[in-house]
Every structure is written in C-alpha cells, then in structure tokens.
Image (cartoon, rainbow, N blue to C red; front, side, top):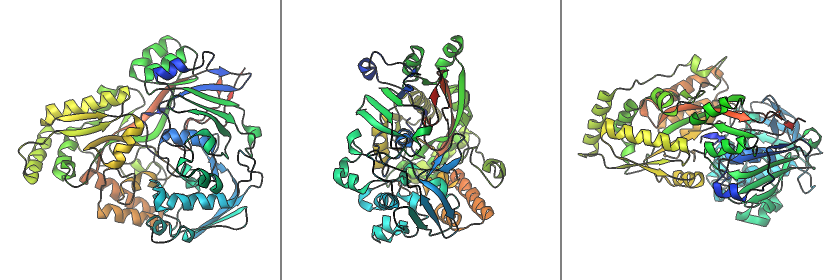
Length: 541
C-alpha cells in the first residue's frame, strides 16, 4: 500500500516522538484511560498529507483508516466487510454498489454515491498528480482520463441516484472489492475540496470525515488527536472515544522509554531493546507486516545505475541473509529473494511455494567481473562516488552504513549516504534525486498485483523510472485475463525479470516485534487497511 517510513521501518510506523514534542506533551498524558476509553500513542513521523487522493505512505494510511471509510472495509479478523456499501454485485464487466442511507459525514450531511464519483474522478485528473492514479486503471477509461486524453466525466463510474454506484471495468478485476477499501478509493466531498483547493486536508479544520473518528487536533510536527465521530453509521460499535498522539519520533528507544514510563500503549522493539523488554516481564507480540524492503536503482539518463552489468555486480555483492542475521538481528525479519513476499497468495497457497524464486548466490569474484564489464561499457576507469538515499531512523542508519562498507570493501566504490526525514525522502524519491534508494513497499490490497505493477513503466511509484517492455507486457496479460493460471504464470515471468534485469534488489521482508499495554484489547494488526487499527479496540477496566 504504500511507502513506509524508513518504509518502512514502518510498522514501527506507528509509534513515537521527537524530544521537542516529548517536552511539549501534556504532563497528564498516560497510555490508557478506561473511564474515558482513551488511548495514547506515538507516531514515527507526521503524515505528509491526509488528502486521500494523493497520500502514498503507511502513516497517512494508518490515520485515514480511522478517519475515513470506503465502500468496503476490514473486519476484526482482517476480512472484507460492508463499509459505506451495504451490499454489492461484481461481474467480469463491472460492479454495482448499494450504499447505506444512514452514512453521514462528520458535519451531519449524507454520504452519497456522488462523493465516490467525485473522489475517483478527482484522483485521476492530471492536475491532481496522484501517484496512485494507476490503481483506478481497471475501470473503463481511467488510464485515458489520467493521461488527459478524455475528460473526467468519461470515467466508467456513475451515480444512479444518491445511493447506487455503478462501475464499468476495462478488463476483469477479481480484486476490485479489495481496492474499494484502500484509501485512494475513499469518498471526498466536492464542496469541501473546492472550498480549500490545494489547502484541502492540510489542517484538521480543512476536511470532513465519514469514518469512525474525526481529527480534532493537528499541531504540525508535534501532535494529532482523533475523537470518536458521533455521525459514523456504526458508532455504536466503536468503543474507543479518543486516540491521542502527542509524540512523534522514529527512534525505537524513545518509543520504548515512553512505553516504560506509562505514556503510550504501544511501542515497536528493535534489536537493542529486546533484553530490557524481557527483563521487565513485558509480553512481546509479533506481526508479519507483509512489506518488502529493497534497494532501488535509478534508470534516468546519465545514471551509472542504469547499466545492467553494474546492477549485476551489486546483486552478486549483496547477501540478504547476512544483512538480516548479522546486521539487523531482529527476530521476525526474513531475508528477501523476490519482489513477492512469502505472504502473497497464489493459486491455492503461497505464490512463492508454487513458483519458487530463483536465487543469486553472493559471489565476490563474479561481482568484480561484472564491475569490470560495467566500467568498459561506461568508458570509465573508476566508478565515481554514488549517492544512497536513506531514512533517518536508527535501523535505516545501520543498514546504510552496512551498504557503504560493503561497496567500499567489496568493489572499491564510494557510497555516500544522504539521510532524510520521511517527507523529504519521499520528495527526493519522486524527483529522482538519488543513485540508489533504500526503499520499501507495503501491500495496498489483497492481490499479487499490489507488488507486481509497482515497476510498470506507467506507475508513478516506480521511483527509479524502470522501463522494461516485457515486464509491461506481462502486467497487461495478468490484468486482462480472468484465468488465474495464466495470471500467475505472468507473475512468475515478472519474478524472473526482477532477478535477471535487477530493477531492484530485495533485501528483507519486514516483521514487527512490539509491546502493548495489557489493558488495551482488540487492536487489529493487519497487512491491509491501516495498521494498527483501533476501530474494534477497547480499554479493559
């Protein structure tokens, strides 16, 4: 679903504070309050935006999953359940959704089919510049609308009255229902978006909400507070009254200290914190996030990383198992050898079991042979210093310094580290201001395509601007067929291309270890739908 802070480190993503914010936090802040049904958390970073049409990251997805609701939503066990739509009918040609008549915005106005039509058209307008516009492409005319070839009104979606939404597909889309629970598919009020223009969703008072919570406070860089939305159609089932986030930091040690001091109810654990957590008798929870971390190469003109032999040299240099076991050293994290994590479903079980990923073994002699070939092809005697764009979390620093050491000792290449806070790192990735970027991707919906089309040439989240005609062709094959066997055969071809052509180097599949206040119950940790999710949570007495 999206970019993770540090991306990924992510699901650490949900917990934390800068020391400045720590000092500014209210002295009475405490982790849980059963009488008020209030929970206090920290965030790894401030969400770069809460405009669902343009948001791309896990932090925004976490917050928006509490503020907004799509046609479908995720239940307490991670299953798809009715959201604003009471029921639906899907065929290979399209879908019809019947909306509930008791759904309201946080100002009391009804949520209608027109709000979805506007939101989807708005996200696809070229002027919106949504990096998730591609996710609408299964809908008829979506790609042409996004390219400016057709007007937004040509999109294959229409409101039939206020409470029926009809969608016409360009091609069969067996996972479309899962898409409707993703943040980019959530409704928008046209009058509110028009009122604020580019300032829409820049502050708490510049947006309205149709989900279980409203955004009561947003002090940029310091504090967010969510309050239960009394207009939410299912408010009677929401037990938490307040989610307070007065701390913002990506430092796991700062998070853990806040938890230890009774200030927050959840804290991610990193390698150095495991011993203290065990010695204090804390129950340690684990969760596989479903996200993939990788090194992504820049293919823009003039970049050395666009050379195939150079990328093969780095591929033979890197050992994901060494990185995971010796550098990161945290239980639950697995070495990555494919674009598709082990959690991705195949025909009957795991895709990776049905289509094992080819592996390239670390081989320093082969790496140096490929590097010599790259120098010949590039007409260089030596590779000039390269820039590695990385996050600013402790784990991101640790990884970046390891890559720097590996490049220098293995290939004699100087790798300079450009560490940036999350928002600035995303902007530099968007501009292509890097040679290599330590990136990550979390799944947006429950289908293999959420990873597969990431490096299609038309996907704006393809930050390195990789372009491979055969890769694109296989994506189109998978999109246009309703035959699952043909679909997964195309995915196996994509997996092979990633190994052979090396647009990225998978490094690890992320897992999260965390501690949680024992009186906080019903928190849903999930790969999809915003994590962690508190709409089914409560504070026990």
